[in-house]
Image 1 (tube, rainbow, N blue to C red):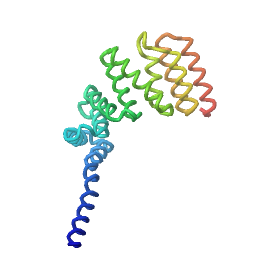
Image 2: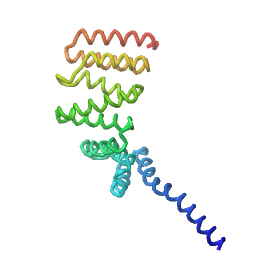
Image 3: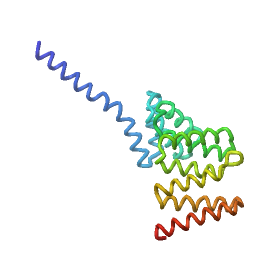
Image 4: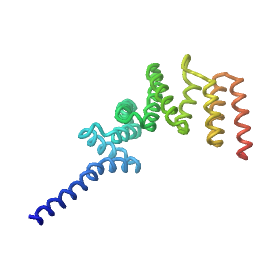
Length: 208
């Protein structure tokens, strides 16, 4: 009897140990394919996974990311799956920032005011969650510099460029050059000149 119980217990341990790994393997496979830029294969693997487990936030996120890159890309489907990832894991700042990014791309494509506001609010929340996410800061900076009235906020764009420069002078240099170019194209001569001066100061500090 002891031998039977021992074997049964051992089998339970082995099965229990394999269970989580087996469940996690499809996600890992899909992520690996995505990172290898094998987007069609990644899409197929991740679509199978979310069909069987729609509550898997990681699978939803990587499916959304894949759908932006597979041929042909689909921003609308990407937004749907990234939105699902955000709902499933609202504390994940990275998911929120990517969702904001795809909203902004759709807003730019369609001139969709409501989607632009949704993207702006999402990226603002992502920055509040993690001010060190310079990618999110850069996204908000570009939005504030390029969005149509009344969403544009040139002062905030400059403030965000300055914040980026504090954290990473090289990225700050690129940020100020970017908004200087944007303001120049918009005819905001004074703001373009001010941003260019900031870029020149940073270039001097960086030895460029």
